[in-house]
Image (tube, helix red, strand yellow):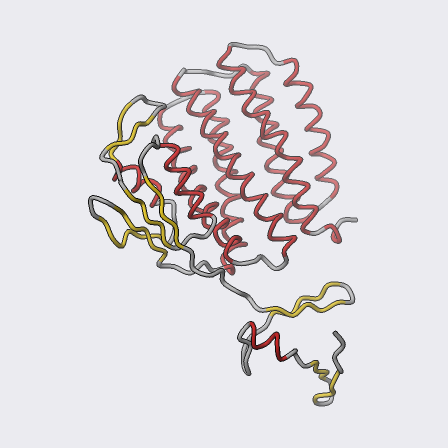
Length: 315
């Protein structure tokens, strides 16, 4: 549509907003709107919070891990009320072949669901309710915190590959829980509120989700090393070290989009691929190296997402 530009004061030009649009989104005198410059286009919008959403699930028929992933996905996708019906007394933990109480499993995941609380509980149901509105202004700081946690976890993984101890696995577990809480909250923000533009929202979502996967891999590698007393050889450690350097370089590239960093990462990726093809060792060592190789491949997806966010900054 065409709008007339109006002179307002000596140096200000004004364009009126369509009445139908302002009524639809509740824009009134004194309201704040977002103005985004995109080349020769100005985009005007309002920040909208996704409507409150409610869902009900049955807790019957799930093992411990599957139930955790179900609750986590509902939280990340923005549900504000989650009614869990038919809570069992115990849930099987398949990895350890033992039973855990439902209360313990729920408490574990609830500690990672920022802003969710139990507001009702009886023998037939448990009701989780959001008591906190996601704040998109926190997103950038949380992503930087996530980068820091991953860097610390990478250092711990390198230590564990040389000398696996229970204390190192416990440290990784703490990093993993902290990172899961942050990634879940970040993904919830992106699902309930947009990050600047749609393109940046989808790219940020992909980056955060991949980093969540990286922390999972670090945790699995450390757990395997500690549980089975697996130590990597000098050559295998060089592979692990290079994978950790890839992550460090991506964090630098995320901030600066320096193509020199990108070139270095590309060369290292191909070197790692050759080293992984030639890798030998015990089944346990090969398992750990194979898991770390997944991170090397995920670098491509991370870089592609960063390109999509700010291609105009690249030289």
